Image 1 (cartoon, one colour):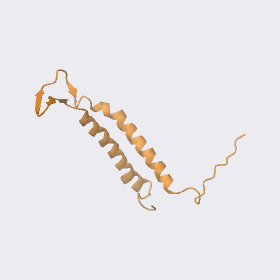
Image 2: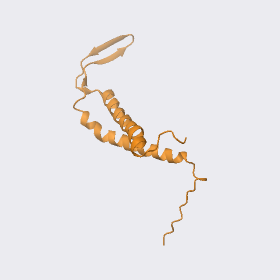
Image 3: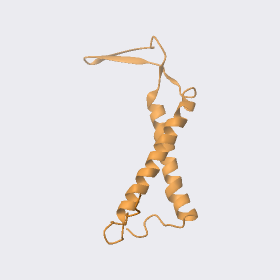
Image 4: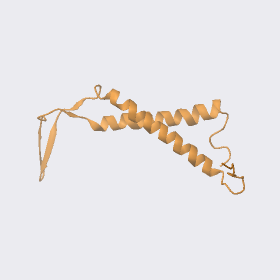
Length: 106
């Protein structure tokens, strides 16, 4: 037999925790989506054209023996997608569709 005994009255449950839970869910969905979408950009990202080794004050640069993908660009793409989803949720969906302003009660 199951009892429905969960009670979270407004006095004992701080309101900001709902914002923290919502933030965690939005960031989780945004990073998960970016993680799934980023591999589509692997073929579009260029390769590093030069490798450099630092020996004291002299740098020796040469073309790499094997092509090395520019991971920095993929990081920018990943965090750009994450930020775009985050902004779309908080600025468009939450404000205009859900009618809950972002900073109304904090």
